[in-house]
Image (cartoon, rainbow, N blue to C red; front, side):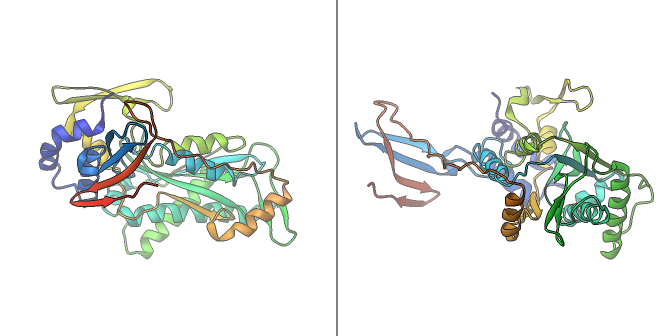
Length: 354
């Protein structure tokens, strides 16, 4: 398998020179972290075997949220946590997209634009719940920001996992719609457009003249929610591309594949390594920006409301058993290894064995 780190290491100098007018500190840090991942520069872990007393040296992962070689277990942990919040109702995957004409503005005002996208989308959904007499107004949903298309082009949009229903605060009852219909996508898009533009005007930003009047939003039934959660979990913590999709790296050219959304068939793109690196690194989020957020009864401060809902809907929550940390074994005798020292840069951290 061809690693992103290999491509970045071989072309980092050329990349920095070619894209010096576009890259910022967050891109440079991501590039450095990806290159250093699982190398001595990321840190050294020194283990000793309890049986044969031989030493084994391993290298730390960088831990950067945009590194495809890191955080293999974080997605599963997030998914397990969200499963504990699922209700026995139908769920919908609602997607809000910023039109192409606003992408340059979004790129140059990323933190503001991404916050505005999530805020306008959240307020749109809440307004639809409040106006619908068939739905309880106290609902809860999860949002995840994506900035990439399937071909890794810049394409800001937000996914929301929304339950069919909400808690009627007055009667303390769960209210939901019958059938598979929740909201009309065109109507969602119209309200979303108005709210996003209102936020722009309030912040003294101007709408480009070519901005279309019709925006895009989509609302589709995804069953009991497990499928939508699994889909989103794949893209949360391991960068925007799977290294399995990097097919070749030869003579300064990178070939990668992606699955086309309409045909569901794989397509390939071959381009210079520097161009490929920018295609990936342009999606590094601003420092401190939270890609995923919980609202309503899924918010961390609303645990009592969620628990009340689970009791009303007679939700059975299986006991979550914490996974035991994988035990490393000695490559020589398969005995148990224990960590006795860590080296990070010039720091040496001695860990006493039990």
